[in-house]
Length: 198
Ligand code: NHR
Image 1 (tube, rainbow, N blue to C red):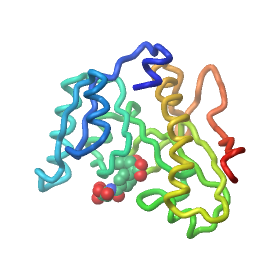
Image 2 (cartoon, rainbow, N blue to C red; image 1 turned 135 degrees about the horizontal axis):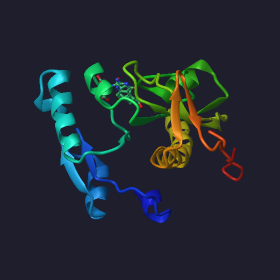
Image 3 (cartoon, rainbow, N blue to C red; image 1 turned 180 degrees about the vertical axis):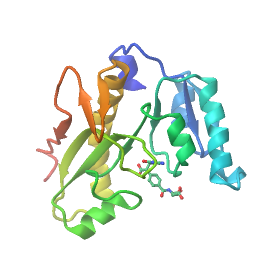
């Protein structure tokens, strides 16, 4: 929302839809004059009936792009197929490492020294779609999952708006497992954490 306004994107955010009535993003959207909607997954006993209700709400807004942001329900194949090539997610790891939940703890347990975030197109296989952009951050002494999450979140907030903007500008094309950006520019970022005590 902020990048769209600040950079004057040729786009508008049609709606913010959450499965959680308490999601902070709903209040932020409403405060910025954007329509909100809740589709509470707890009111559905099957994933496909929840997904169908969610799709119905999304389609009322006829979006060109669906942007998952902290969306935590695994989506059915039918839902993913409906938005194929026009649904993005940001996952807090350097995919294909550490898909799924408890990502930062997975990274700490594996002892990696570089961690990060990935923006990818959503495909049926969880956290495995074609990668649009990635950002790397160091793992430093004393990190716990929360500290690492905070460092990663900063770069998520950098690469995700950039990736969304590339989509809006029509610059992304999916070529098998790869995403081409035209005209080309770096699809990676190395976090500069100088001065952050690392
Ligand atoms: N759905 C599909 N088909 N493919 C992807 O790549 C998806 C997806 C749905 C969500 C986001 C993803 C993340 O960024 C995402 C990518 C939730 C889970 C999960 O296990 C896994 C990955 C992601 C989001 N969710 C549990 C479930 O049973 C619920 C966990 C909870 O409610 O806290 O749905 O990491």
